[in-house]
Length: 263
Image (cartoon, rainbow, N blue to C red; front, side, top):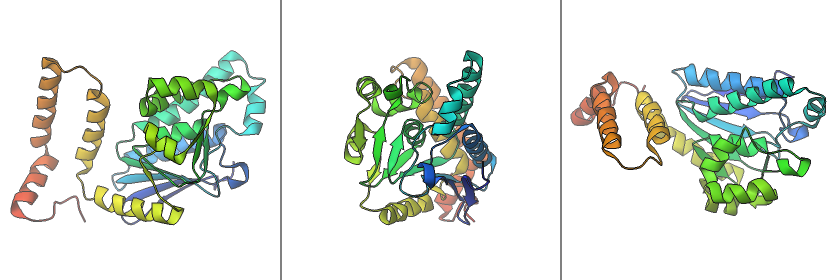
């Protein structure tokens, strides 16, 4: 794999950009690219200078899923080799999904197979009218297994039952209606302008609060309302208020000054 197949850049505002840079194969990934993506996500998650992450693809496509040469190799794998390979993909997706920063995907073209999974793992997916999503695995006798926990949560079980089995192409507007797409813009330039403005706001938020708020969405969504849930939510806000960041944020607000996490 070329060192430039996955590009990692951190700008002065604290936004890390991870770019799939294989336009000649529509940014399809193989095991080496999967490992590189995982390394980038871990790097961004652990770096306190990173406040948000932008995931994008170079050229006309976002990500076409699995690389053809990689799939040819997989055809001769044993079950154990396939299991090890699949665990690598699953670990990479989970690292992106649980990254404790705000994550944004820019889908400017085709997102097929695993590309849909990458978009679903991000907190926000911004698309242009050229975006096209397809859970195409069944066309080659496969299933979208490793991406399914994230895609199904994004679009719901009913839609997952349809699109997992039909391999229909989902355009940007339909993706928006399903909840897979957060915003649609008429061009990549206007999408990037929106992302830049959004990131400017994100980096002004408390970094620990962002990580904890994201975990809150994971842990409390879809649970039935109960005394236990109410108590847990009360304990979480109490811990936040009692934290150094929470005290600093409230003090800064009351004193009408900038909190210390904004340089």
